[in-house]
Each structure stands twice: as structure tokens, then as C-alpha cells.
Image (cartoon, rainbow, N blue to C red; front, side, top):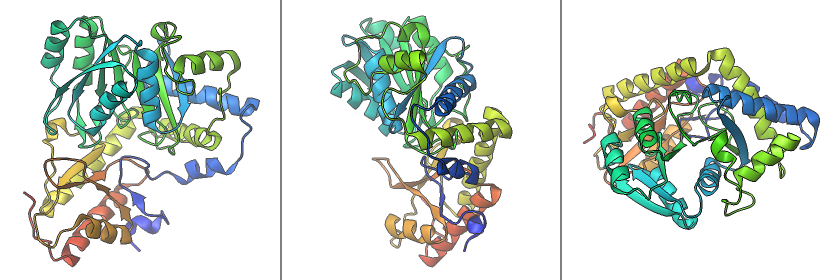
Length: 377
């Protein structure tokens, strides 16, 4: 059994979510809750307030939770915030930006895209130019941390340019919220979307949108779907404190517990510092094995690292993955179209020994596969 499994019986998830959770978070799911019960509604209210506090958004925004994966909430945000005759600009440098564009197409929202290489951050000058060239654009939708690579886009600068043009900004902050600062007091946005099973270290099953109150109030009738209508969900919650439809009660209770641990750890600063330390330890450790990360450090988010696969005849990702799993760690396949890679997440409830154990496991597997000295391209 590896060092990592001294605390965790199950393999440690070095993925972009779901991720490894604490024992306390798991134990929070052992109780059943009535969906209309007053005690459960208090949990929902507390969770909504705490999520707003992380973004310093309590004075200006509303937190609207939604059942399902994070993509459910991304689609809900676009479908509710963008009017049916709206026009969305989506700058694209990864798979999740592409997903946003596809959502817009499904919803019948006019969409324009601007593409970058997979190792290139979004340029604020491009956003400025594109908005100046096409005044019909009403909204810009961006991914803060593009999980397909780990790239960190310059959110605050983009937000200022979008605000200068008087357009709305929708942020997919799925893999950044709670670990990388997003301050609503200085970063204007209409909607920010994240989920329970990411940097807050809850379990998957619930997304949420921090929507600007003044914008949300004007969104009645925009949504394409009853289930994904954030305006209707918000109005109902304001009146009753309840969810419109059966909530993921165990997920909400686990998130409430995870948020308590988040605050006890020291909030965003501490969580971000822990992930940054994991990221540095990972990149340095893999470099010592001859494995090179895909992104330059200037745009590498401390969330997930894309790694060049060894250029060696013995390398096969599935065999590599299975061997690392046997040593107690779950990795993630690459998502790039241009080069072969794999990904290693830096999020989750595990300490320094967990990341050291992962690096040691990868080293052991490379040696088993007789490619320990191979250097990536």
C-alpha cells in the first residue's frame, strides 16, 4: 500500500473533479434530510451565503444553486442571463470554452468565437478589438481556468475591458472558484458559475451561479428550460427558502461541511496556497523524472497540470494509468488535440505526503515500463 493510502483507503483522485474529500465531508452524507424540512432549508441558505462571501458578492449578487453537474449550471446561466436575441462572444483556448460555444448553439443564441492555441492565454486586446468591431455582441463568456490544459486566463483584465464596452460577462470559474481570487467588488461580472465538487472540496452533484441581482431581476422569460431557469429557481427560493424540485440533499449537506472546513483552513488564501504548493511540488518532481509540463509557468493555474507523455515505444496511457492506479492514485487523460499528454490534478483533500506519493508512484511505474529515463518532447 502506498504512502497515500495510509489515510485514504480509496485511491487519491488527482483529477479536476470529482476529487478526494475529507472524512468529515463524507460523514456529512450519512444523514437523510427532508427536502422541505426547515433544518435542511437553513443549510441551503447558509451555503448560498457562504458562497457569495467567497467572491465578496453579497451586496450585489445572488447565489442560485442548481442540481446536476457544473455544465448544467453553465447552460442555465447562458440560457437565463443571455436574452434570446443576445449575441455571445466566446474566446476559445480549450475544450470547456468550446463547450460553452456549443451550448450557445444548442440554445439558439447567436455566438461568435475567437480561437487561440491550446498553450496561449486569452488576449484582452483581442477582446477589446472584437467588441469594438461588432456592437451587436451583448455578452462575453470565458473560462477562468481552462481545465483541459490548466491555463489561467487573465480574468480581471478581461472583465475591465468587457465592462468598458458595457457588455455582460459570464465566467465559467468551475476549476478556480475558492482557490483563485475573484472579487466582485473589483471584477465586474453578470454571472459566475462553479460547482460543489471542485476547489471547495465537496462532492459532485450541485452547481451554482453567482448572478448580479440587478441583471437577474430582468431575466424572466429568457430561459429555454423550466428545470434550468435560474430566475424561477431564485424567485422560488426567495419566497420559500426551498428548492423548486427535489434537491441533492446529501450533496448540499456535504458542501456545507466542506465550507466549514474551508473557512477553518483559512479560506481562499490558504486553499490557494495549498494548491500552489501541490502544483510546484508536482512540476518539480515530474521534471526530475524527465517529464515536462505543457504550459509555461506564467499561465499555469495551480489546479491541474498537463504533462507531455514520454516519447517511448513502451508508453501506453491506459497501461500507465492502470499501473499508477494500483499504487493508489487516479490520474486523468490528456484532452489536447495536438500532442499526447496526461493530466495530474492539484486539488483535493490530501497533504504533502499525497503529492510526494503520487510522484513516487509515477517514478515506479516508469521504471516498471522501462521508460524511467525517457524525456518527453
